[in-house]
Amino acid sequence: MSSDPWGRVDETGTVYVRTADGEQVVGSWQAGSPEEALAYFERKYEGLVVEIGLLERRVKTTDLAAKDATAAIDHLRQQVDEHHAVGDLAALGARLDALVATVEARREERKAQKAKQTDESRRAKEALVVEAEELARSEQWRSAGERLRALVDTWKGLPRLDRKSDDELWHRFSHARSAFSKRRKAHFASLDAQREEARKAKEKLVAEAESLSGSTDWGATAARYRDLMTEWKAAGRAQREAEDDLWNRFRGAQDVFFAARGGVFAERDAEQGENLKLKEELAAEAETLVPVTDLKAARAAFRSVNERWEAIGHVPRDARGKVEGRLHAVERALKEAEETEWRRTNPEARARAEGLTGQLQAAVDKLRTQIDTARASGNNSRADKLSRELEGRQALLDQALKGLEEFGG
Image 1 (tube, rainbow, N blue to C red):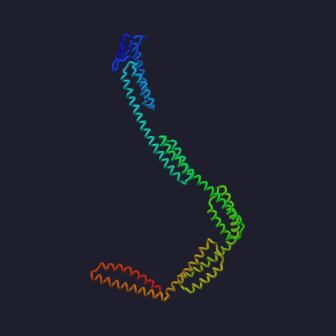
Image 2 (tube, rainbow, N blue to C red):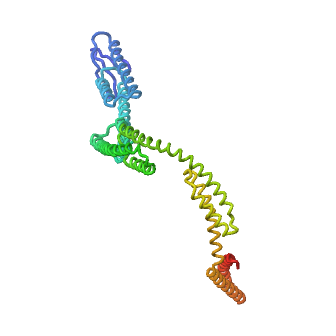
Image 3 (cartoon, helix red, strand yellow):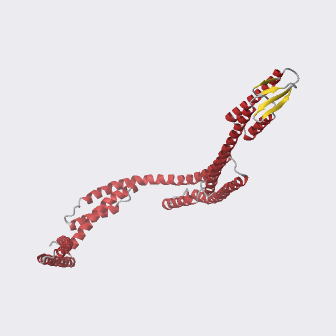
């Protein structure tokens, strides 16, 4: 009979392994010596040790699925429990128990991670749905359309939820996209109709513009061209090709008219340039009348200037305001001199000014007497109040006296 610390072989060739529950039969050996029998079953034990070691490394270092890891553990445990090896089977069982705990912990960790990912995916998809529903109401057709397409790509990159939740969110998401597409389609259909109406309206404007291009009624025709331009802008845009063609015709008709008018006006401008020089000389002559010292003589001189001014024809439009402004400034100075003279010699206005000044002077004198009385009686509060009132009346009096001076008294 042969034995070692973990097993033995009896005289019949039966091999035993020692366990905490006593000896367990491993198998029978008839082909050789007892030592060879123990060596054979010890090698089987070493094979189990290697297999368990490999499984431990796979569990720790790879993404081995919990289901596959459990199946491998069960397969090895069956071999350990069947006692077909000689060695510390309890140690192997303990290592397998530890592996079960590790796999279960990994399973729970992955379950929690999956739940977290699902929650994050749910929140992300809900955010995509909310944004899509907001975009569905947008009228920024290009940018909103591009953003919705980007949202679809983002959606495809997110993990799926449970079927019910995923389908509900996708339904909302898809409905928002459809609503936007429907509104955009309706908008552009309406836009096409508007552009067709614009094309028809502009064709009529072009026809009229071309019919006016040979007119020599410069003022009325230029005014009508301005009206046509206003109507052109109000008509809106036609389709691009039609718009460009119509505009070229419309603009070309105007160019023909305004080129002809320009030739006529060039001759007129030369004449108006000479008129401008004459009016500038008259303006300088009128400006010598200011400041006004002799109103009667100034009036006569200005009438002479004005009569000669009216006899001169038009000046260039861009210079008209400046040269006429010089003459108007002299005219205003004469009117101001006339008004000053009238006020100075108007007896009714003088009487009113004197009456107002007398009333204000009396009020000021009365207030001063009241202030002195209040001070004498020790009523400083009333005196201060009256003093403030006196300041206002005195200011009015000073103003009235200044106005009275204009009457020379």
